[in-house]
Each structure stands twice: as C-alpha cells, then as structure tokens.
Length: 416
Image (cartoon, rainbow, N blue to C red; front, side, top):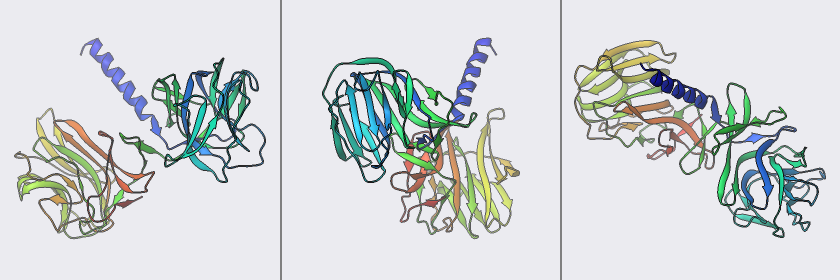
C-alpha cells in the first residue's frame, strides 16, 4: 500500500473516530455561569434565530441577558434580556419594549427579517410578540455571548437556568453560525456544535453545561429521541416496508426479541416458498434464516422470551454469502454459507412481516432493537428505534437517508 493511500485511510479513520465521539442531544442547559463565546462581533448587521426556554415573569431584577455584547449600558449594545421583563437592546437605543409570560415556554427569537425587530414565536411558530427598537448603525467590536452578555470584556451571566435548543447567527444574509446541542463522549462535556465551522464550543470558563436526551434529526429538521427498542402490537398491526425488493446481492443484520412461541416470521420479502425467499423467523423449536432457495441457517432452541442477532453477510475473500445467528451477547450459535444464489423477490422487504407470507406475524410485545441493510456492499438502510419529540410517536429512523418510518399497519408502534 502506498504512503499516500495509508495517509488517506488514516484521515478517514480519524474523521470517523471524531464523528463517533459526538452525540446530538435535545438541548444544553446552563447550571450557573457557563456561557458560549460565539467569536462574532456585535453590530447592526447581525441577526439571529435562537430557540430556548423563555423564563416566566419573576421578581429577579438582576441581569437576565440571554445573548449579547455591549460597550456600556445603551452604548453600542446588542442584547436580549429575559428576567423580570424581556427587552431587546439594539445600538444606542433606549426605547425598549417589554414582554412577560406567566409560565416557562419554548420560543424562537428571530430578527432576520428586520434586524431592529425581534419577533417571539411559540413552538407552533405562532407569533407571540414583537420587540421593536429604533434602527441605527453600530459596531462594538466585542464578541457576542450566549447565556450572558459581554460587558466591554467582562462576563455578566444569565441570572437563571434555561435550556438552549438551537441558535443560528447571520451576518447580513450569510449564515455564519449554526449551533446545535452536542455531547462529547471522550470529555464528558456538553456544548454547541457549529455546523458552519464544524467546531465544538464549550464554556470558556470551564463551567460545564448539562444536557438533554440523545436525539437524531431528519432531513426536514424534526427531532427524534433515540430509544432502546420498538415493540410490536401483534397480529400484523405494525408493518414497515424498507422500500426495497431483496435480491441475491443484499444482506442485513438485526437484533430481535421473541415474545411468544409458534410461527414468528418477523421480517423479510419473497416471491414464494424457497423461491427468491429472504426472511428471518422462529418456528417449531428453532430459529432460521432463509436465503433464496432454502434455509441456510437453522438453530434448534426454545426461543420464547429470548433475544438473538440475525445476520447475513458477504465475504470478499471467498466471494461467498453467509448467514449467522448469535445470542444477545454476540456469541455465535450457528453459521453457514449460501449454497445457491438466485434473483430478486417480487415482494418488498418488510419489518413486522414477510411480504408474500401473511398470517405469521410477530406476537404482541416482540421487539426489534436495530436493523441494517446492505445492497451491492453499500449500507443503504441503518434503522434505529426513535420517538418523535413533537408528537411522541414511535418509529424507525434511517440514519442513511435521514428518514422516519412509522407503522403502516392498523396500530402505532410502542417502545422504550
């Protein structure tokens, strides 16, 4: 292998290691004096979209700056206050509009349309209030802070704890910061990841943030909590098509819990029995992997209330397809090669049933922990159990296509 190729592989491994070190979370929360230095200077050309928990009216008359920088009070200031009142301070303007609420609510602050008008939207994007100031040109050459204000080089921190869900900062019409909450595993640290700079921001004073649950984000910006498993309702009430018809080049992996005995065909697709037949199932004291023309892996066991890993895979060295069954601790139980490879099934590959073979569905409370699917040796589905942050509905999230799959049957999924 050439030195250049080794270097490329090393860089790819470094990027993959760095990617796995970070986990997306729903929010970060300041516990005392933690803050974020954006390294963006305050001016009238700056606008933002900031999503956080707006704090209810209180008797606290101390500083409630959630964002900003200034030279002095009413001197080239860019500040947003949320304490006993809510205020938007812009430039040298001293004419301030107050806004209060009677409860803590999730809001988005947005002044991208007019920089001197700060609009407050609720979680359903309904306009609650507009804070308007006089438009004036200014620049203070001081970095803008989140969870506080840069007061001519000194920090005035936010006077209460609150949760930050996202923050976008624009210079004119150019997006220069796109912050999302993130957790770094190796340092046990919560902070903000900037998707523009591809940089992780933590509190400069070493005070740590806390954070929310792990989440993933789909292509439309919707968030989903990462869950441990999806539970089936039984009787074929939960079905998901992965949108692919299986063929002899495809292979997959899943982890599945058998909640009951009897015929339990929990995933697959086929043309007919032993004809382009790709499925996993339990039946009459054994668990099986069927691949095209026959059962390639069979393992005799009482499988009720037990968890197994089912896997088919392609070995490049032998140019051979294999199947394997493992226990929940990844101990190999059965292994075999595919004797003959056929063609493409006429039915789609489903989770929750074998398309083309009805009436043998997963029993109630059967569980699936993950599902992966490869085509032409490329991972094309990487599906994990999730729950919608917005609606609470359970489904499978595909990390490859950033797409959510809900049940297409008569019942919703449940999970934990």
